Amino acid sequence: MTPFEISVRLFLQLAIVLGACRIVGRLARPFGQPQVVAEMLTGVLLGPSLLGVVAPSLQAWLFPEPTKPVIYVLAQIGLVLYMFLVGLDFDLDLIRHRLRSALAVSWAGIAAPFALGGTLALVLRDRFPFFTPGVSRLQAFLLFGAALSITAFPMLARIIHERGLTGTALGTLALAAGSLDDAAAWCLLAVVLTGFTGDLSIAALAVGGGAAYLLTMLTLGRRALATLYAWLTGAAEREGLVLPVSLVLLCLAAWLTDSLGIYAVFGAFIFGASVPRGPLQARLEGQIAPLTTVLLLPMFFVNSGLNTAVGLLDSWISWGVAAAILAVAVIGKGVACAVAARLSGETPRDALALGALMNARGLMELILLNIAYERGLITQMLFTMLVIMAVVTTLMAVPFFNRVGSLARA
Image 1 (cartoon, rainbow, N blue to C red):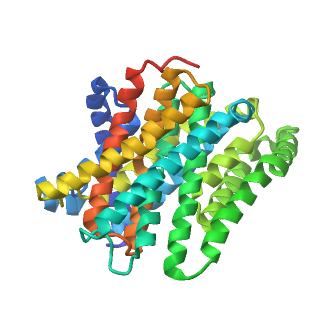
Image 2 (image 1 turned 90 degrees about the vertical axis):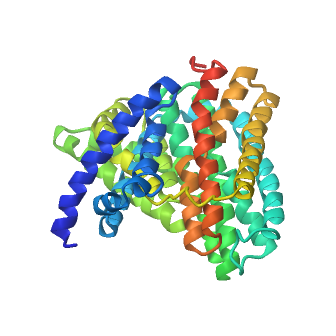
């Protein structure tokens, strides 16, 4: 396809994707699912899992291979912009008062699923061809543990936003625990990849560089940004530079953390959290949010769904293994986080709500799985089982969250 043909097809894709997302969102609403989950399901429905089965020629024509890199780029732009908006709403002062709970929930959400998932990986590795031949027992343990430890941080953020919990104690605690949780999971993945490449710089960059970026932005960075934005808003002729300068800095932050190996969303989120509060915060949200949430962000969820095929499980044994993976994931993540939150002094309802939110894996899980699959660490069968786990735990999140009655502001 020529660049012109790709651009023509892309506009049709956008129209179909956006329309389908709204239709599925409308259908999912009576079941307590937010728009973000509808977008995740839409990607699966438009991909090889449904449309590719019902009308394979139509699916191949609508989403030809040459257009997929363009969809991927749009998805990454939308995700980075949205995580910047989430960072703008992140209340650092509030989290200081809940740091103990955030750390407890985060570490429980890492340690428990990591141990249970790693143990399950050792059992599966010796019985099923789920890992490629070059994967050792230790590497299988680390990889599976990291996969079950991750939280759907962008999805968690959007659920909190859609439910009006942004800035509340519960919402802030969930975001803090989720961000710490995912940062640790990406560092674990970097350690796993180090074992295959023999390059210790991968892990060193992910852990050391990520920590340095976080500490710098939340200390010196915040003061520097306060000075910069005070200068930009101090004269009428410089007012028009606020948005362009913000976008330049945002892209640099995303590039930096992506280069470090801890993914662009964390650079965007931390940068947003470092921007001065007040009128500037509301101004940037008003300028960036509408196009991001309506047009660009759905492309992120659809992009991953287009690369997901769930029709590979063809026996009761394979479905039984998938069910075991799901059970370990729920117990290791949801239950452990709820218990840790309760022991940290949270109310029973908030503890259960937090466990439900942290249990969702969403597309962050799919990103991790795609990395593992592309690097040749897992087979397509295991990839599919873990995708099913990610979808089911995400679908569970909001109904259970609603069930425990924690929609009210903390």
